[in-house]
Amino acid sequence: MHVCRNGILIGRSTVSTGSQGHATGGVFSIPVKKQEHYSKKYNNAPMPYSIFYSGNFAIHGTNQVKKLGRPASAGCIRLHPRNAAKLFNL
Image 1: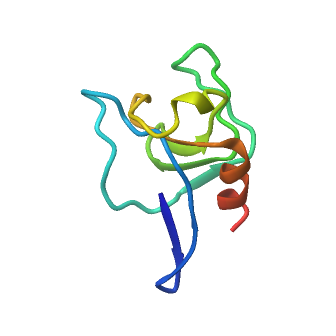
Image 2: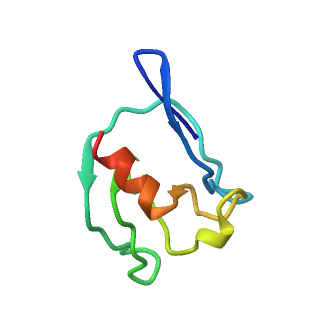
C-alpha cells in the first residue's frame, strides 16, 4: 500500500488483500472509522484501527502479520497493527 497526501508519498506498507474469490479493489470514500472493532462475521476476529470503505470491508490491523504480503482476507486490506494505527490517525 502506498499512502499519498497531496500527491506526495508519505508512507508505504506491506498488506494482505482479498484471497481468491474475494477481490479487493476500487475507489471508495471513508464513511466510518473505529479504533477498536471485532468482526461479527468471522468469529469476533480483532480488527484494530478499522477504516471502513465498503459495507463491512475495511483497512485494518491484523494479528496475522505472517500472512502480510499475500492474499489472505475475505476482501479487507490488512496491515501490521503499528501501520494501521499510523494510517488511522492521519
